[in-house]
Image (cartoon, rainbow, N blue to C red; front, side, top):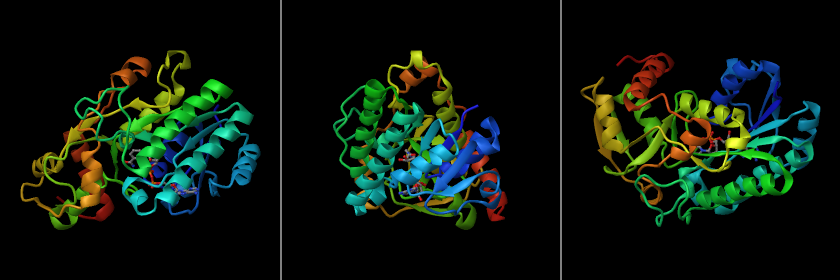
Length: 319
Ligand code: NAD
């Protein structure tokens, strides 16, 4: 059975990856860690949690020894929009956590999962059906750190035999923990605001298409990649994965199917808009499909139905 350490476990993805992994590998085999403990009580109490600054290599090493960790899921990051406010911090955290995880796994001969992102692409990249292997010239510090992280994962695999794997997540939509300052956050907020106010003001313009994925698919993708036969992996640290592509009008139309009076307004944030325009409209994820049988289970309509079901209970609001 794997012994897993999750870094950055209290964020949007980690808060749901903890129970997902504990269901598969057992509660005591999944050690969650972050700078803070802001997690739902049931998640926090379901197994070991350690306060850990992932930039502190010695403390990370101590935890890996203490729990005999063989696999690290590294979710530590400063996200795209937030990173533009403090590029020095974004670089330090995005690269520092990964470097420590890879260096420690080099000693333990362990495995490391690190998400890359659609943010790894830039405005010179073909934007429709963006190929797996293409021009990578991102214009954000987040994107630059993601390209470097993909390369670093390959480097540690090729040079030191670390079982590093990763995929390029699109915008992740979820209902447990709010997103942490990315460009696709609007696609989560819109569901909360729809239930609370029956309206939403989008910070991205109409016609801004981006790839998206519902959290259950994102969690399954991570585990399926880490469990697949490594002999079949050609790309390893950079798989395009997607489930749907829409613009603000598209998600609003999906919401109106169940809430016909929903209103969508616009107040475009120029920083987020510029970032979004440099990212793909839609990605080609055929390499992930071919190399480890990736296939999403949620499209936009199925996700909207599930988001409203879960958020109605969480917020105590009916459609
Ligand atoms: P998040 O911002 O919600 O969570 C990141 C977590 O990292 C936070 O809980 C934060 O406290 C923690 N952290 C920051 N600095 C730390 C440090 N020094 N030591 C320990 N913990 C620290 O991010 P997320 O949305 O959960 O993203 C997880 C990963 O997935 C990131 O690599 C991100 O780039 C990638 N990703 C996310 C999305 C998305 O839409 N959420 C899309 C593409 C890629």
